[in-house]
Image 1: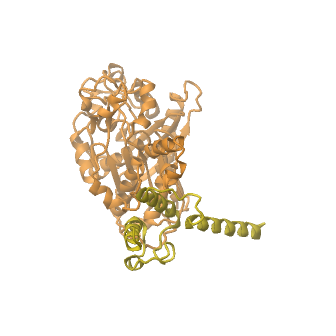
Image 2: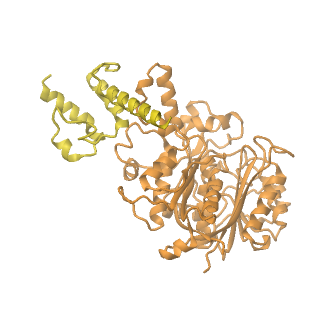
Image 3: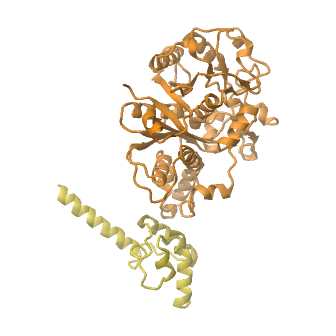
Length: 86
Length: 424
């Protein structure tokens, strides 16, 4: 599968979740789901499930899975906040 | 001076009519919304009939976005959103995605078990070790407060946004809680109501208790028979009712159409004492709830023109009539008109109170008493207490000033509210 084909498939998958039409219409390989497409971060898990279904793969616990990094970052932010409060 | 509270918007999703126009027409004509469901028969239910609102895909898409509908499987949230949004628009407000946060409006929208089909989906996935596959919306679709959470976000309300739950009293209780909040000056407007799923998983437990009608699987529209000698149990229903309550001051300020005034009411419990149990009412507490509601409304029982009863079509109907007779101290020909919406839509459980409040308010606004269907054969024990003409079998057009509505629920809980025709 070429990169172009991959992007076409991904475009179709993320379409229901995007909130920024302009960024979506110019979607390319460096487009950021959250900052550019303004996808609600809660929906990232749904995007992953759709990707798994489409490509018949499992990307759970894969170090490349960005959503885990996102959540992990969130965890540190919350820990830092808690520390500030305590 | 104490705050007066009025009703300025209504929305309804009922088995015999979705939307105010259709519903009003149906209750005036005595149209049944009870139908046969093969699914119930296939699963071995004794009662294979029920009241399910009819909602097209197209209509669903008018209320929820494609994103909201991804993996969506909660009829109670769908019904609640339709009724709630309709009520808000009916009150003269517009729906804008980026509206300013409105700190003066809140929501009390109740339910029993909400999103039970989604729950089932999730349980199967977890048991299959596929917890990851639940997606991001299983929680919001199955939490009890899912309905108030969905509505709160769609409408952008900043006052209290919550869900109450008190079995079949839920809808009437939600209304009274919203009424009190406005009365106490804590908010200007409250969207109140309740909703209940159309699901065999909600209904199954009642079938097992043998409290649902099993004699009318061949004649569904005849199955729900409140006050009838041949009543054989309730027919399960579902749907949602919603009302916009507003301080009179706020309503007048925006020149809103006023349906009726909420004059007062009462919520209590029989404590499962003196004959009350988890599933049966303490008669003394029921009567006290009614008399306390009259006192709260500062109205004499002789001023009540009509009663919209709880009347489920079980053996308890006669006891309910007896409770009304004692509480109002009016009997036979002196008794007010009485009707039960359940004869047309079945028992909509957590949604019953709100749908029936909508019906009661429509009666006041349009000055009619809707007919009781399926009680050609009024129970002889009821006829010993009140006159036959007080149970209309055809719609009556009449001047109505005050209607009392009560709901009673499992857990021995009661709620009673008095609606008054709005007079400046």
